[in-house]
Image 1 (cartoon, rainbow, N blue to C red):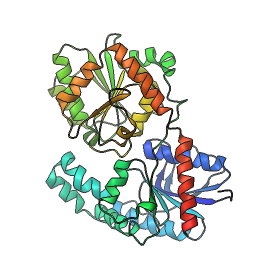
Image 2 (tube, rainbow, N blue to C red):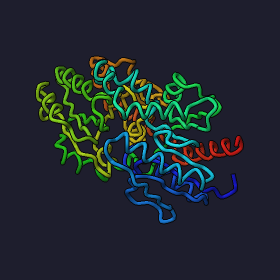
Image 3 (cartoon, rainbow, N blue to C red):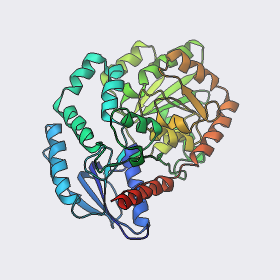
Length: 384
């Protein structure tokens, strides 16, 4: 594609923190570098963006949430559909055009993931709320077989979740894994940051530092990690857990205390420089119930850490279990996780797996994800 395109990126929120939001930032930079015009159409546009980016602030009614979504869609549609060659929604299928589904199929989440996370009754009640009814209706409209939506799914897990519920032609849904900045997340960071950050976290030289990254503790499996930590402690192993990226509710601190883990678990608020904390850690652990593609996993691999995750994390599709990480069967169990953590107390094994993890991460630069988006634009415009 040689012509200069006018591309509208559409999302309620734009910033560069988090997996889906960070991916959007890298795509915007790549499109600008290729000579295309990029516009951000959003309700909240924050952070540092290239001055060539044109911002369109959409005013919305902030409460209740479902009204916010509907007013945003209506106003963004009037702006975007008439003025741009490509309309690319981020995270959710807000408008016809291209959508990168960062969080997965919403119906899949409500029916298959949420009951295990919060219980069947709570999941049913949540699904009945106006917000989730609006989001489900939005999916049904955009994923019609005769519609105009083209989908970029960040894993086969994500793609299959959509196709399980909607008759979208497979020719209009493409799998493109997220990328990682391998200069920012690199094993060499250990030389610069490891000693200082470990002192701050009160990690002794003999402690095995585990790092868990994410904000939704229930869905991402923090309880499982805590129970595995108890099992490893009973074996006399010195493990410490750093939980990065979410402000814990009191119940999590109470659970840590009830399990006898006080002093072995450290909660750290979201930070702009997670690479410092990967440098201080020895093992990345994320036994998630569902993550279409948990970017933190790939960041940890780029930093040279062995990773432990589940088959319900799309990153598992690029892992070679036993070589660059471990993949827990579904559903994962605390004893199974504890067993793998015990194996990773072997420093030689950790180093070998960390080198292999870095090698895997190098195969996924952000430019590959950006090229996949451009290929999808070509296909959509050619079809049109």
